[in-house]
Structure formats: C-alpha cells, structure tokens
Image 1 (cartoon, rainbow, N blue to C red):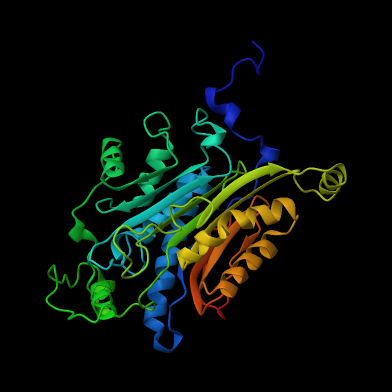
Image 2 (tube, rainbow, N blue to C red):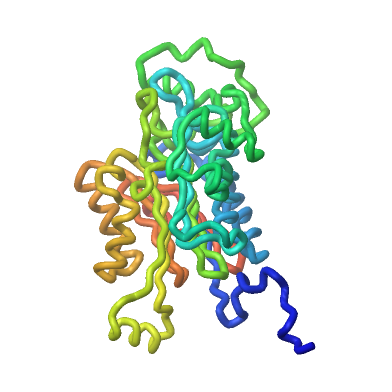
Length: 378
C-alpha cells in the first residue's frame, strides 16, 4: 500500500508544515476610567499578574496546536473569574442592584475541529445573563450547536437553560457579588452603602476587599483576539456592562459589528494580489476586534465592523483602521479602546482615554502587559 493511501481522518484540517502561521493572542481587561494617581505598585502588580495569567492560559491552547476560539475563551474565562475586572465574578451592578452579564464570540472562519459549522454562522452574542459563571463558555457552547441554537443573538433565562443542557455551569446570583463594586453602585446613586446584600467574604478572593479597583464606575469589558496556526482568528468579549445601567439595557458586547467583529476575505485586484505575492504576503486577509469602553457609542458607530471595512475597502493597515475608529469614538464623546489582530500577526491596541488593561503573547510564551496610556508593554 502506498504511504499516502492511508491518512488520519482529521489530517485534512491540519495545515501543512509550510502553511503554519505564527500564532498570537492579544487581550484587554477594560478601558476608560482608571486613575493613575491612585495606583500603587502593589495594585498595578495585581492587575498585570491577572493579565499575564489570562495570556498564559490562551497561549497554552495555541502552543498545543489548539483553536483560536478555545484560546480566546480560555483567556477571557480567566478574567471572568477574577474580581478585578468588569466581567463574570467582578461584574458591576445595574440601577436595581443586579448583575446582567453579556458576551460574544466571532470567528473569521469555522474552527477546523468542527468542520460542519457553516461559514455563514460567523458568531453569537448573548445578553441579560444572571446565572452563568463564565459567559464566554456559554457563547462557545451555543456557537457550536447551530442545530439547537440557530440564531445570532440570545438573551436571558432561555439562553442559560439551553447552556445548562450543554454542560455550561450556572451559579447563584450571589456569586457575582463583590463588595467594592456594590459600594460603587450605591455611591453612584447617592444611596447608603450598607447594609450589604450578602456577607463580605474576606480571604476568599484576596482582591475583593483588600484594595479599591483602579477603575471606578467602569463601563469597560474584557476581551481576547487569537490567531491560531491555521490562520483562523477568534474574538471573544465579556462584560457586566456599565455601572448603574438601566435594567434590561443591551450594550455593544453582544451586538455583532459594534463591540466585536471577525472576518476574512480574498484581496481583489490583479495588481494588489501580484504585489502581495511578490512581498510574501497572503492574498487572504483575516482580522478580529474586541472593543471596550462606552458601548452606546460603539453601537452608534458600528466600530467593530467599521475597522474591518476600512481594511477591506480602503486597504488600510490594521493599526490605521483601528486608530481611526477609536478616534471617531472620541470625536463623538465616547471613551474607550480596542484590541485588533490580523492574520499576519499584526496587533493594534488604540485607546482614547487614560488607560486600558492590555497584553499580548506570541509564540515565545512571554506575556507582555500594560495598563495606562503612556505605559510600554513589559
């Protein structure tokens, strides 16, 4: 029997050695409201350690040949479990003193591990979650089940019930309570901070009560954009929304094209295609974005998809397109930032505010992080 007559079933989804791309993971932990004057070396170290933990979790997936989707979910799940960030465990409260979480996932192409997913599936957004421990895991679960979850956007108890049937962990709403976020919520409304709705839990999560978070009354999110060795890009975003938002408010995080986006396309035009080949560039472009900040402005300006459109139709670089869109937010009065990644491994992290928790890790496995706008990644 010839050596090529018998091959593993999944080999068709594995890139040839020469087709492998360098993988990259970029993350953010929110932008807009951190105060450098109140920061301490200890508090900055806590945030940078949490960012590094998320980067290493995603890198472990990518370095083992895993999917961009799974790497991004792994990174975001770490931040959802950390009370320092406005997502999952550290989510802010709405005007009624409740946590309503949101999340999303989008891919530039279907994951190789699930070839039955149609290319038009693209992604999902989910809002008004109150019991999902890791909303990003729910987004992944629903995306991978187009038969029983065929829609693009889901909400509330129905989404959580469907997720539970797929093995997604649900928790009591008290899980999301953190004392500092509760006190921010009450102060923001001019109401007494005590009594607390749940007993304080000193020692359970060292970050809960030891220090006041850098970001006060946050509007940000957490997010990750990953590029795997097959050239697929996945963007995952998760948030508690903005502090003291109205009950039932839906932000940009679950709104496709606003707070998140991912796509790929073939470069058109003979001259451009020939030039890209001559310069060693692919004739296919893929990109992904996760935004953070004042979500209402991201929705009004369709910030996520506009970055992609500027790249596709104006032939702008990733950095130029992302920076232009974040500046557009500023002109309209919206604060925030974005992380963006393309299939050449280029990374952009523009912001129009005092800071954005952010980080990146490449194949070498060395996480580099930063917090304030004038910080260098280290």
